Image (tube, rainbow, N blue to C red; front, side, top):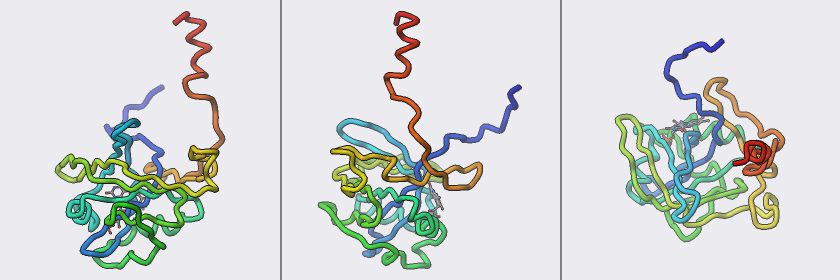
Length: 191
Ligand SMILES: Cc1cc2nc3c(=O)[nH]c(=O)nc-3n(C[C@H](O)[C@H](O)[C@H](O)COP(=O)(O)O)c2cc1C
């Protein structure tokens, strides 16, 4: 029996990521879980939904650049902390060791195994949120999380965010092969 709920968003889990930007001339880090994939081919576009009150937004708008860093389970407390305090009051620039690629205003986090530097592509402006659309211009990964040339998420051990339970979850085992497991039904239905 189904129960009708309020029309709430239940699109979880999403990975909790650390977004880096330069705000007022200093690096700042914010935790973001409302992140999306816009385009999986060139131009590689991703989205961040960021409440307008956050300190980071102005820096992304000014410098037109940001980074997206994927923390592993060992960074759960630091990830939570970056989402608990604001750069308006606390200097978060020394929370992590940072490095830079070709975008000088996209500080990336050394201790996160995967990093993407993004150029601001567009902003979808809602009443409450800036939806930043970024084009990925550089991607870095620790060799320890690579399976040959691709990122192996079982080695990354991302933090999976769920709003209902307000908890970080771990990735479970792989279940089946995409574009393959459905073939049994396709064959049975002959197309
Ligand atoms: C796990 C987690 C996920 C979060 N996801 C988002 C999000 O997707 N969008 C958002 O606007 N704020 C999100 N926040 C809240 C911001 O990270 C938080 O308000 C932060 O302190 C703002 O930092 P700033 O003012 O330095 O920019 C999240 C916080 C946590 C702990």
